[in-house]
Picture: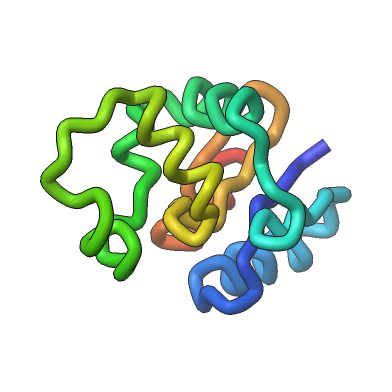
Length: 113
């Protein structure tokens, strides 16, 4: 089953969702701002993406700039920050089996479906 972690207020996320809808494949939409992601789930997503936690952070968000930018945070602390402030999570994230991609640009979604 394909899963998209989606923020409907984000144009890139909407584009990624549209690509999935047009693919004809079954998928699940998780609106992660409404359905919080646990620390363990976020860790597993980061592992699937093959990135470090800081690479999943939206560093231009106001909350990041005002409260966290320039602070020496561990990976575990960065994950806790994203769980506490899910708006900081880069989107969309699409997972298909043991593959995952951040849909930036949205056409990257096609790589794993």
